[in-house]
Length: 118
Image (cartoon, rainbow, N blue to C red; front, side):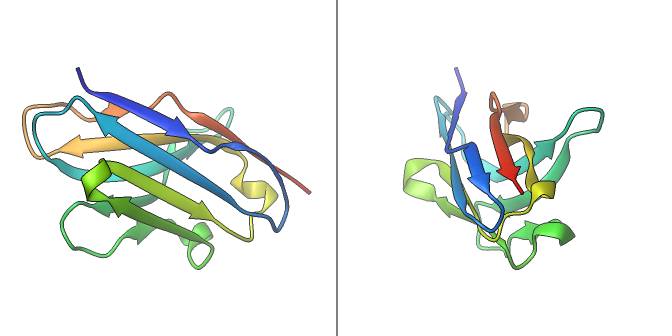
């Protein structure tokens, strides 16, 4: 059974940094793409950053460009999101998502709360 385990959320002051991680386990087929999405109350879940397991450049939402960096460790089936110069607008629940090359449907992590205090 495929599982995603997220970690790294918490409370940070504006201007500070946090690092999220998400590890996939139990998959028999290769990962195609992983990403981080953010959801705030009353709004739809929105992409923050995604990265393909093959060597393509990551994709970032405009509000986080230059501040957030998504990276991957293929050997560990893990994706990271380094968040710097954080702003109150970055507050929300961050969800990890994984898409596989075949067989499995896309899956979501349980979500991790990120709160930026001004």
